[in-house]
Image 1 (cartoon, rainbow, N blue to C red):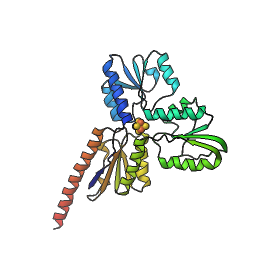
Image 2 (cartoon, helix red, strand yellow):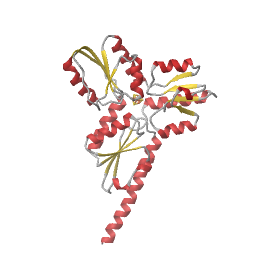
Image 3 (tube, protein in one colour):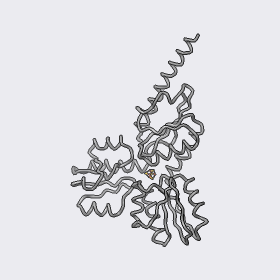
Image 4 (tube, rainbow, N blue to C red):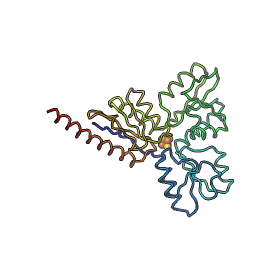
Length: 292
Ligand code: SF4
C-alpha cells in the first residue's frame, strides 16, 4: 500500500483560533464557559473540550451563567443581543473570514443589491450571514433546482467552504439575467487550497480517505470533490472506521482531512493504515510462499 498524505491538512487557522479563545477563556475564569452549539464540527474535539470544562449548549435556555463563546461559524446578531440581555458574557470566536463574508453581505444589501449567498440554508455560517442582513439576503442551494428572474442589480457571495467551480457556475447562470452583478469571492483560501490539492490527490489514488466530522461542511466538500474525480472515497471520523476490505497491498491511498480535524485523529488514522499495510504484506508474503 502506498499512503500519500495531503500537504495542507488538519486544523485551519480559524479553528485553531476559536479553540485557543475557548481555552484562554476557561483559564481566566472560575465561572461556567459554554459554546453555543459545537465549537467546531468535530465530535471528538468537542468531547475533549467538554472534559476541560468548555461545555456545548444547544440552546441559550440550557445556559444559566458565565461566558458564552460564539463559534468560528459566527451567529445572528439577535443571538448576541439575547446573550447579553440574559447577563452572560459574549466571547466572539467567529473566524475573521466568516466575518468578512458577513460584512460583504451587509455591504451589498445596504447598497441596494438584491443579494444572494451560495450555501446550505441549515448551516450555522449561512444562518449568521442571513441574520446580518436582517433576512434580506437569499440563499442559493446548488444541490436543489434554483433560478432567478431578470433583475437590475444583483450581489453575490458564497459560504466560505463552497468550491470555486460552484461560484463560477452560479455566476454564469445569473449573468445573462441581470444588468449589474457584483461578486465578492468569500471562499476561504484554506478551503480553496485544500480543494485543489484533494482533486490532484484523488486523480493519483485508488482510494481517498477523508477524515473529519460528518457534519463538517468543508470535510464533506473534500469528499464530494474526490468522488467527482472518480476516485473511491471514504469519509471517516476516526481510525476505527477503516476496513481492511477497502485496500489491496498495491492500493495507492490518498489521505486528507477537514479544517476541523485535529492532528491526533489524523495520526491515528495514518498509523492504523500503516499497521493494516504491514498485516497485508505478511498475509500476501505467506500466500506467495505457500504457493511455492
Ligand atoms: S475553513 Fe476557512 S473560514 Fe472556516 S474557520 Fe477555517 S479559516 Fe475560517
